[in-house]
Image (cartoon, rainbow, N blue to C red):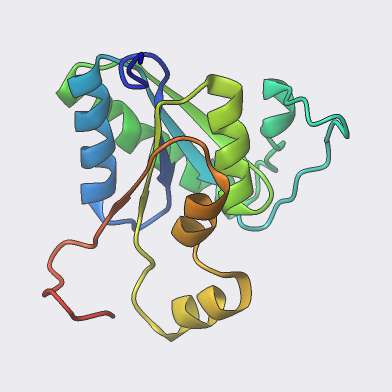
Length: 166
């Protein structure tokens, strides 16, 4: 059986104010397996408008157009800079994408389009708003676990004691 690692990119889901351990773990995994690191930010205020009903994924359709006045554009620039730094520190090539739609589905579409070897995400953010969001929409990690055909690595928040959830 051929190893799935060392072939496709490691995809990392990125968010503003995310625990830096998520990006570091993804960059280290990409370096250890000798593959490219692909960072993806899913704009929470956008949605996917291009879709091939046959299930084919066109990489160009994954990127929403960001309004220059939108906060998402600033977030994307900041996240790309963090990605560039982590990739450089680990000595791996990187790419960055801004995606639209449901975060788990968007990351899954990107994984399929890139023949990814793994998807790396963090655990949910602490706080009431994050808890309500998870109740309504479900956990991105949980959705990825149940829908993907590639390994999903979930990085726990650093500084959280075992058994304690924020």
